[in-house]
Length: 116
Image 1 (cartoon, one colour):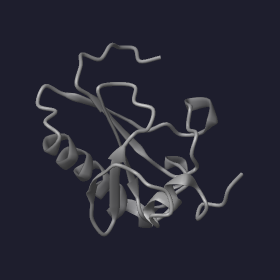
Image 2 (spheres, helix red, strand yellow; image 1 turned 30 degrees about the horizontal axis):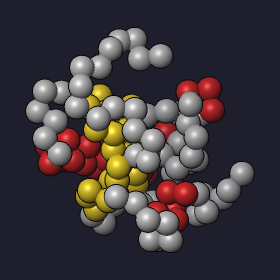
Image 3 (cartoon, helix red, strand yellow; image 1 turned 120 degrees about the horizontal axis):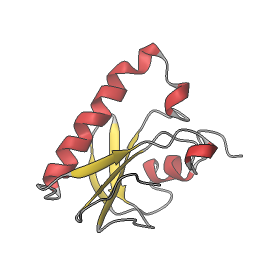
C-alpha cells in the first residue's frame, strides 16, 4: 500500500503523472476521471493528503468545507446546470480505490437512485 505521499493523486499534484486538470487553487485540485462513469466525471482532491473522510480531524474543517465549495465552482464551470451528484467513497467496502480523499462530481445525464 503506497504512503499518502506516494498515491497516484499525490503524483498528479506534483505533476509527475499527467491529468486533465480543470481547476486548481492553493488547497484543491480538480481533474477529469480517467475512467468516467458519467458524461461528466471530475475528481476534486485536497492538496493536503487526507487518506479518507473517516481519517479527517477537526483541524481539517477548512479544507473539507473548501472542497465542497470547489465542487460547486467546478460544476458551474463545466455547465452542470441541471444537477449533479457528489460522491465520497470512504474505505474499501465503499469502493475507495485511492487512499487520498476525493470527491466525485458526476453529471451530464439523468442519474438513478439508488446508486449501487
